[in-house]
Length: 121
Image 1 (cartoon, rainbow, N blue to C red):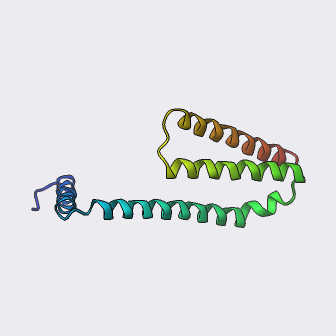
Image 2 (image 1 turned 90 degrees about the vertical axis):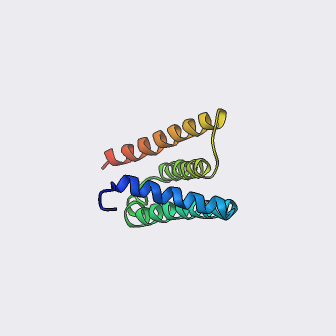
Image 3 (image 1 turned 30 degrees about the horizontal axis):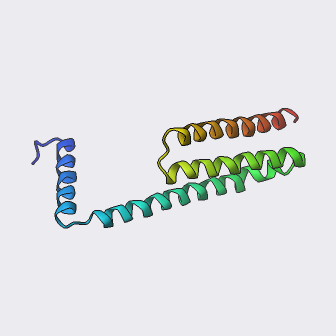
């Protein structure tokens, strides 16, 4: 086993796991575990984004005018909903186009508002 490349060894381990899952008829359990991991990943990303906002963004945004702060928060909120929609469903056709369009508009509005407020100082 010492002369076997790590890639071949890892592929053999994955093949063995796949055979065990098929033989024991555990596809449903695997799909459930995948769904739970997907939700956990979304929650982890949300937690990291919240902590970054709490530590850095909140103080700066509180100095902005009310309209610009609201516009920024609405753009970021819609961006979060858009990315969550992408992560929790499979997008094809018009849905994928809508995802990209909303993502682009939200990113533009948020970045433009942030840069305009940064240039005032």
